[in-house]
Image (cartoon, rainbow, N blue to C red; front, side, top):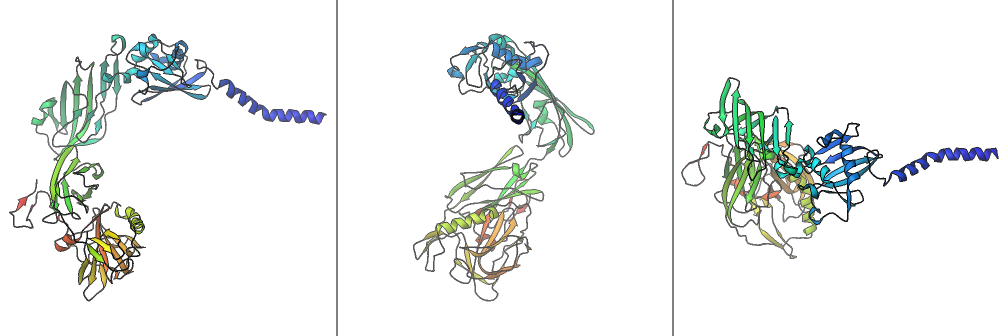
Length: 557
């Protein structure tokens, strides 16, 4: 009997904590939120700014609700009036999210504060609607936390031409809130150590136009300018020198803008020459499958921040690379591009540049192939594209190529051209992205068309044994249908270095090598850079002789 008693005691001791936990959970779950039950809260306003508050013994004042926000919100709940549902105009609108720590359990409430104190509501964790007393609604709306309810309470933002935000070291902003009360919001920041690069002149923009602005500019030698901001364009400001800038901007209340304020900005900047861009083409006329070359100078921003679009859309994403003092981009014109006039629109360092070129029409005769086409299928082409995707779109920051691009065979001939619509004896149709090159006589060595780095060696169903060489600036050459390969991934090759021996692996109609070029994932034709001196880049400010009989032209300086 004693043993049973002690066994019962032991079991009771083991399960007691679990029982207590269950009782505690069910007694607190769904329990009303009140000042005694809440230990802390998190508030997220309409700007998505977050505030955290702990329970305090400080007395709540409606003139300073931040003194005890836990009591403020629990008092709102205590004095709220139950409503059938949230009014229709408020449904789907933004709300203040308040997460209350109620007996250690997070409870989320949604508070819909509007500009009219009589029209403020909240939803509890179960979605029940309550109206907030006018007194507490006014107290919240006129506090710093209610600022996001009023559009005219939004602070102005100052930016550089490149879109960089410069924080004010001090700002005071007064706006009309509830019951004709005009609270003043203040904000302080440490001056930034960033040196902002600004093209040509010290130009900044305000999201809300300032009524007046005074600017002071100094360098290591002393004051360079002190006066109205609008007159700064008439001041001779040195380029390439670190400057200290102080701007005091003021905004005045108007009938349209129910706010006013003053902000002080202190920052460092360096005035640079304006970016310039030039477009070159390797060919007298541009047809689908060609590409154009863009050179930029005086660009301060990282190349990743240069925005490039084509109008009409070429369905490509041009990529800029750093090349010494310049930035360069090769812009492919994909096969199938309609003839017409095109514009490359570039945004760099807050400046816009439009470069125009014309695409001419190109028609091809269909080529008929009688060789075995069993290796050709949509699935095999898709598999090749998938295998090459990450290789051909990888970004190499180093430029390897220079000068002429040579033929891949020392004594070769083109047996099948780039861009030709092709139909096999079985009826399968495809467009060739390759040039097949055979050998008249002599060496069967396949040569690197220019300097580069080997980034792929492998075998594909269609192209057989394949090598990809990265020449830099997004330009790659691809060699397929090889018999043997004599290079490895990571090898750096010079123009004319042997990559392997021509052959008939994969889909081919003879002992040859299939070659093509690719720019950031888009295939381009190698013909013109074989026939000319390579990829043409005009150094900006340099006079160049055109390939035609036209007079010499000078690029933008």
